[in-house]
Length: 481
Ligand code: NAD
Image (cartoon, rainbow, N blue to C red; front, side):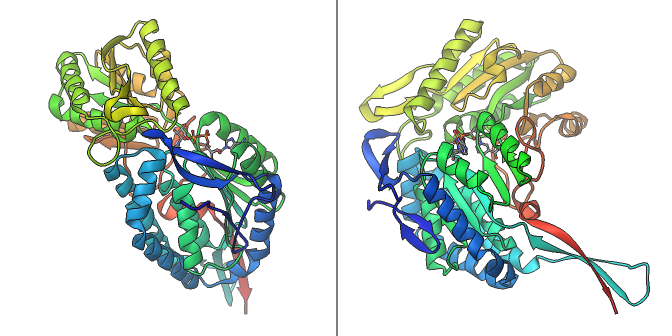
């Protein structure tokens, strides 16, 4: 694959210092997947300045015209769907089915906001004086800095880029260094779609310098960050102190409650899909099954069987791919050791997988612990790997208290045949997404997405109409005639 360059001011450019770096295939780390620019602060600043120069023209471009750019971008992505899917699998490790689903989602997001760009309006109000038009319109917030993680490397960029551009904001994007290829693919599509120079910019390289410069630049008006809590909290403080509009969407410790009335087999399928899908590397992954004592033993047996039926391996013939990097794999193995030392019982899994079709890839077994207390680290901290903790509870009240007794609040679900209990749960659980009889992962693109507590800055939501709110400011207009 050719070395990929930054896209700045409508040109494909190299980092000024001339440095590059390679990415590796997590299923076979000896394979180089891509070569990208190792940019520095100067490159990042140049991109913000290019965006600032394009700001007024893009803001004044009619919404339907901005939407047409997004529609053509979606079409170009669609033409390259297969290639992007393969790149996502090779660079991030998702199975082909998971990667295909994610690329399809990114395409749909561009089509969705292409239409939304036509609808950007405002509201008309009754004035207190005669001969007066009183209304509020939405204007773009300005230059938006976008910082994205590696775990959904095309869908998350899409759900920031598309609403920002639809709203009339120029963007500067620093994707995670680990898997930037499919994000660069979006800018190739934007370029082919004729996005005006400077409106869309991507600069690859370390977040600690490139991302930091984009966020801190005086011409940056808004910051949209998705990633880990530690980095997100620092960025929130920095951006808010500088008076910038900021949203941070962070990690999770998502529970599924299994009620005494649940169908145990169904519950085990739901929990396993939430815990082991995308190798547990989802912010909404289920990492705690909170199970009523009446069904605990049967559920445990069923969920262990689900975990053991998962075939681990690379590409399109297996159910679960590798972890993204060696350090992510090591972190998961460390948590497995911590849980064992804390007194949890390892029911299945727990080991990394090597040799044969695993080669030197970063594979790990789907892992289930029982006997977990909610104050164990394994039940409180985000693991970001395929590790499930089963916690036994006596009744609904204890299940709810346990579900809520974490610093996070991103997604939660309950498996139950008791309608009252289901309704109580979705109202009482402290979580941005709450589901009945469904896995914690997965959300449609036209509904608001964001967390409670440590999972989010709780400022603005992403996706749907809420996605446009972040990138626009309301302006009230009096017209006396
Ligand atoms: P991370 O916090 O390590 O990195 C996220 C991004 O921040 C990367 O692009 C990185 O380069 C950049 N960055 C790092 N340091 C920076 C700095 N000092 N200044 C500016 N940018 C900086 O997270 P990750 O490992 O890439 O992603 C996994 C995390 O993301 C998990 O915690 C997961 O739960 C979370 N996540 C949340 C959501 C959500 O919508 N809530 C979705 C997906 C992932």
